[in-house]
Length: 245
Ligand code: ADP
Ligand code: MG
Ligand code: MG
Image 1 (cartoon, rainbow, N blue to C red):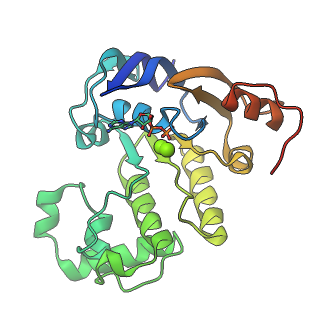
Image 2 (image 1 turned 60 degrees about the vertical axis):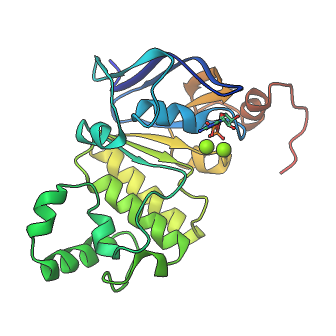
């Protein structure tokens, strides 16, 4: 009983075998870390699961049924909301419009803009973003832009939220807000995939971890009792006798 699964997924780009028979299973309501060195295949796996890429082999299952999403909006409509590593918002559009991007776009065109803006301002304050929401998104700092992406992702009616290296442009205060948001999602029974290579973060918020190396999954298990040194060894593919941090 997994909410989301990748089964035997293979994906190659010209000259790069990015995913090699990857199995990944997300349980309902868990926060599942996906870690691995740069280039291990984490983002590619997420992009296959959410319909950015088609797998060469293997399949994606949502709540026990095979699914083929043709694009991320289809995945979102099915309940998988994703924050990609590259912020995929529209820099020239207002903060408020970005918040509602991809959510009932036709109806949004009909709503009262003043009301939309007031609602956006209120929703964003929960994420520590207190700003004039009519400004173009690009006038915000990178961390605040990422928080808008996060607010957008979690306010969609999702059963799975995927975050690809969400803290890379966040300040410590914003990271704390993110962790609160993740705990809130978990309390609502929403499962989270948390892609990171910052081990302190995964010990802070995650229940289980999947480790990828060179396009393959090399470990999946509980985080409790799993030593940091062991995780690093798994990521690097060699025994570590000392940690340098
Ligand atoms: P990670 O997110 O773990 O850092 P990626 O999934 O981004 O790893 O990349 C895995 C491998 O696939 C890398 O060798 C990367 O260069 C390659 N890759 C990813 N996306 C593409 C693409 N669109 N075209 C060609 N190669 C790609
Ligand atoms: Mg990378
Ligand atoms: Mg990546």
